[in-house]
Image (cartoon, rainbow, N blue to C red):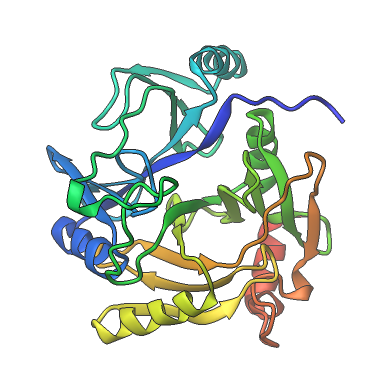
Length: 316
C-alpha cells in the first residue's frame, strides 16, 4: 500500500451561489439553525453551532445556483506549502489569493472537472457572544435549538463526467476512497472519499454528458435519526420543498433527507454515518443493482430506463 499524502486536515467550508440570496440565508438560519458570521459584498457567511471556525458556508448572490468553491484546511503551514508544490507538479494549480473573510491566504486549484477548490492554513475562530457560550469546553457555543439545529458541515457531493478520474485525483491529494458504485461493466458511477475518519467529505456521482451543473448537494450533520425526522417535519411545516422523504442510505449507511433551499441548491441533512479509522479501509464497491442509495426501498432508479441510459452513455 503506497504511503498516503496528508496535506489536508478537513473540509473547512463551501461556497454556493444563489439567485435569491436573502431567501437562502433565511432558510439556512431559520430552518437549519445556522448562525450568521458576517457579510462582505454580495456574500453572507454562516456556521453551525458546533463549528469552531468563522464559517462553514458562504452564500454568494449569483444568476443561478451551484458551487462556488470548496475550502480545505491544511494540516499545518508546512503542509500547505508541500500541498502547493504537489498540486503545481500535477498541473492542477490556479494560484494564490490573499484570503477571505474568516481565513488567510489560500492557494486555489481546479479538479479535473473544473470544480474550484482552495487550501489554506490560517483561519479565524468564531467569536461567540458571552450569552451564547457553552459550559462545555468541547462546544464553541450552546445549541440554539433553532430549526434543525444542525451541528456541523459534513460533506459536498459533486457531479462528474469521469468518476474514476476524480477518484484518482482526490486519492493523490491524500483522500481515502471508502466506497464506490459500479455498473455491471465496471464503470464507476459513484464514490465517497475522506481525509479524516468521516465516511466522506467529498463524493462524486456520474453525469456523463455534463447536464446537471457542478453541484449535486451539500450536507450538514445532525446527531441522530430522530433529528432527521424532525428536520423533515420542520422543512415541510415552514413551506419549503422536501425533495426526498427520510430514508437510509446503503452506501455510507446514514439516515437522511433532502430539501431544496430557495436558491435551488439541494441540501442533505443526515446522521448515523459510521466512522472509518483503518488507514487501509476500502474501497467497498456496490453494484448498482443492489440499490446502494436506498437500503430499504425495492425501487432502484438504476433498474429503470435511467440505468440503460447511463450504461449507454458510459460507452463501454
